[in-house]
Length: 402
Image 1: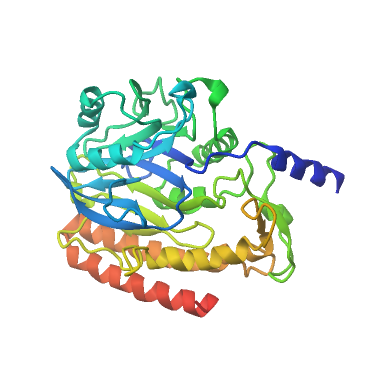
Image 2 (image 1 turned 45 degrees about the vertical axis):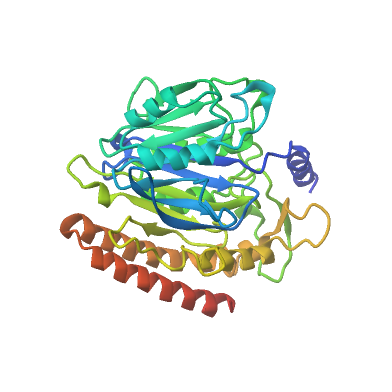
């Protein structure tokens, strides 16, 4: 008990991280199971309500992740466009010295999706945009040619890290949380999560090449703390009725996690329309991954788009369940969960009940994406979207009564 107490105390005393913080990974096609590059982001923000949108940019149409309160979609937080260009970001709080946070990251992502067809285009955008750029981010980008890179970007300059360069990424992947490797390390944020994602990727690389569906379903649920190495599974109570409060502030997914997105690129001989944004709209503790492609019709699963309130229906369902997990009514309510509601030995926690649901969504998603790749079968994707909407509504109602 004394050892457990000390471990909990360590977590409690860690610095509180900024809310606009994320965990990300980019992987070269040389290191994935199917040869398609990918970029991943577990998104942390002070705005927990979000949705997917199809938008027409100045040059390209794109699908992107947007906050519910951003009614004009001025800021986009990840997605891909019809030219096969994709982008995500993580805030990097050490790139602009003591100047603090900025508000231009989402604006730059929107501009890039609207204008860029390639990683080279994005680099040109950074070269020509008016300075200061009002950004402080690690931007992860990929394109239809297999190029994939991070750009550590501050107000006036950037540094590029090419994941296809073995001298930069010997294992074919790179990771970022909330600091740039070229910044002032006295200002680093997200160190605990960087340790966690490093541990995860080190374990994963030993199993062979990386799989997109595996990464989107497992990284956001990685349950080992990066510094203390505390595993949530080691503290699981017997049932969901055995309340056990557990500190979660510095895990990869925590209270501020609003969504996750993994953009899977294409092979050299494939059309850009085959690009997929695998998305978790809502907390990964209480929502499931759904694939999104950019259809000619502009249709999306209704569960991921605007449900009439500006928010995605899946996001709303996720937040309802999340309130059961973050059940403290006073004190530091965002730092602790009732672990029994998330996972327990009786297998009735939210993440446990949703696992087979997600597996079915992913399985059928892969099947229909293959139809698109082989036959340009857009109708199959639209039918799949309708099935997802009906299936998820029924499962959340049956499993949780919501």
